[in-house]
Image (cartoon, rainbow, N blue to C red; front, side, top):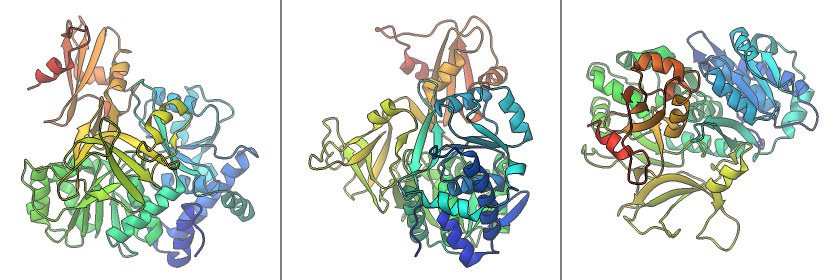
Length: 511
């Protein structure tokens, strides 16, 4: 077996075995494994030629609509021995600029004509090469160059950088190694019995790490991945029909999507006989809606996964083996293969059974840290405090949990001002910073309404403001998924005795 120093070698192996079989399809067409390899190598050749000698590991920003083209660029980045950086196509220019700035003039951007016009309004250093996708994908392949470049990769090199929300307003680039992704794909295939006959229905955006499940399991096993049209998720009643008509066997969706489908009532009307695995991750899955799924599609395996972006997607899983009451806590289970979970209490000691503490992760799936941000990296990635014998790096998630009497991990919540909405991890502080850039805003406080799973933004202002118009201003600074669902305008915020904004009072006002 060829040594997998790079995850793109999964594609090489799949091409040898499955060649003309469809690998990926989207609403505009499909691509076979051999075509994906060919086009990926063309992009890789162009990137390698445009990367100065000794200047490798230059991030490749992929600024395209979610489509097969993005996957071609990801493969091209790996063939050129560089990590890829998925950029949402509707991301505001202000935020893209912050990502570009954090890369300090290194790398490449692949986009289309429309994206290139957006880039012209920004300050892009000349040392960052900008490429039009339609041109770069037609580069003549230099097999010798690609082989030489790919051979320089080692499995601890970064495969991708995904930027998450940061409390200071500056996004953080989580840098993940090839080995973590390869191990994860192997675990997924084994756990959910995925082979070349499987069809994966992709929901997760490519800038969201849940997409790793779909992409690399497809490449590992020869399965087909269908990129479900993004507009379809606006009509949840249509999703089961799409799953049925496309013979989808595995879905890995955020709970919000599953909740919307369950609440629509359509599950009692449509059978999905080919569907085998219903997997979810990214936020808490309510038992009420989970039970609706299990009753209507009893032939499926249901699994609750957990993992922050700083892990190669997930680090724990729980196969749902019984019905849970609405008031029960759905376990996040136990560690995946090649991963270890420890729960540390306030004294940095291993928490006892039923004692809450912080989830800390050890294993090949742990990321390399934050790109070009050693200070923040050092706070989250550190030596295991219960291991004095050798260097053992852990990631402190900031999530609270406990291990119950059955040995299963039960998630409690966050330790800080961070929330998850539709699977996207959001720092409320970043929304507040963006709101302060809007004219006539004197103060801002974002709170998360757990009951309705929404963000409410309180602003201090003498002016009356409407949510829709306010969000149009916010979109200049933050992505659409971070926009608040409700806006509350106040003359003055309540304050605590220490003269801090009284967030507790503001949150209570929502009830």
